[in-house]
View 1 (spheres, rainbow over the protein chains, first blue to last red):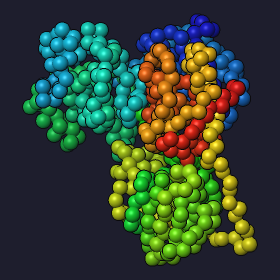
View 2 (view 1 turned 90 degrees about the horizontal axis):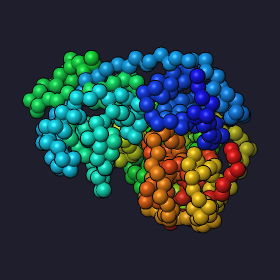
View 3 (view 1 turned 30 degrees about the vertical axis):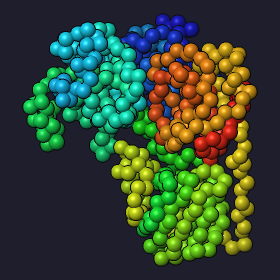
View 4 (view 1 turned 90 degrees about the vertical axis):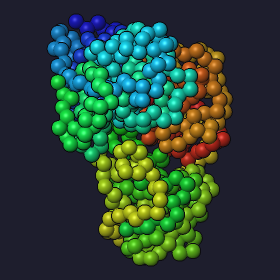
Amino acid sequence: MENKSSFIVMEINQNTFLVEWYQKPSEILLNKLLFLRKTLKKHPDVLICRMGYKSLLIQLNKKIKNLEWWNQYFNKILIKIEKYKNFEGKKWIIPVCYENNFAPDIIKLSKALKLEVNELIHLHSKKIYKVYFIGFLPGFPYLSGLDPRLHYRRKVKPKLNVPKGSVAIGGKQTGIYTADSPGGWHIIGFTPVSFFNPKTSPPCFIKPGDTICFEKIDSNSLKDIEVGIRKGDYNFFK
Amino acid sequence: MIEIIRRGIYTSIQDAGRFNYQNIGVPISGPMDQQAFGIANQILNNVYNTAVLECSFMGPKIKFHKNTYISIAGAEMKTELNGEKIKSYTPYKVNKGDILSMGTSKYGCRTYLSISGGIKTEKVLGSRSQFKGITSEGNITKKVLIPIGKSDFIPKVGVMLKPINIDYENEILEVYPGPEFKILDNTQKKFLLDNVHHISSLNNRMAFRLEEKLICKLPEIWTSPIIPGTIQCTPDGSLIIIMRDGQVTGGYPRIFQLNKRSINLLSQKTTRSRIRFKLLSKV
């Protein structure tokens, strides 16, 4: 049963409102958000529904008349569904080259974390990460599940240009720069996989609810994989 | 085709925007000043989503390679067609070989040049709006030829289009309280609402940063979706207003949300412009 006070509905502007949960992000909440998003997509008044770690932003195709109605609407759906069916996402294996040439910050970061470089790589590549939502850059997945031993504050001075494909750690998070961008995270590797291409359909293969693993590769296989990706015969879908 | 002879300071192709891809991190884009954009198209009976040139601070110089009609709306730029001054908010016939030259903006910052039938560049993800990483160019970067549609405009005889008076010097931006407004104390609220603020030199299609900083110790929030007009406060107290090309998610407290009119008005302001916030009681 959904506790009535577990979320709050707030108006953002005349046709947009935010539903935000009080609890911390979790896979249970992620499943709930994915379920709600699926349901909302069928609602005739809903134009766009977007996800955050613990919120949904809903844009209507008309002015919001009655926010309380939406509050009750969410309560009703959440009560109806007593057991959230686990969202079965896809599993992706992302090859990452952690060699120094591709990981400008790995030595510094391992020293700061008091870890051997190999331990850092092991801790980063043995975990399974859940995709919560996409944002920041086109195709950039927000991932959960970074080992606490790898948590480290962001750089004081962000780098002006972090190259596309950089795998990095910032705060409690790890992520992949899906485009060249300024950024303050510590770069510990490189992946040849492109997470966003406006010319393909869909432009972004990864979806909220999917999982990602990083697989350590050396620079020789990096070259082979790059060739494979270009030819279209490299498979990183598990 | 139209030929860009001189590109101006920052000129980009914009239609109404790219709406269905925020879920994969793609900004909405579209015109900074939706009102001026809409008027420019309306004058030529173009449909609302017609792609135009958004010209910032100083407009381009353009050679027309076919006969068509044009109209200009938004910031006032001294504009000449074949050396003769032309007015905003009025349809003009242009002929093959004509040269349109747009000067610097005198009043406001962004001017919309609409062409009958519209700009017909390739659509990427459902929109012609230029954005780096989506379209091949993020703005007009060089002398290029741009395809335009067929003109079907028939000017109405005897109908004068009245110039539309829009006060770009109005300092008041109307805001709704953002989700984290309630965590501010009274001194902080007073600081935001009772003072004149200024736009810093960090202002572009992605975001406007203000010069004044809020003295605060606000927590970061769990990253959440944001929209154009969301005002975020960074850990050092900087106030950042998200604009049309802005990020679709943000992890800083959301203090205010500009209403639509105020996003348009802000688009016509630039470095050192004065602004004041007026808090609207709920939406």
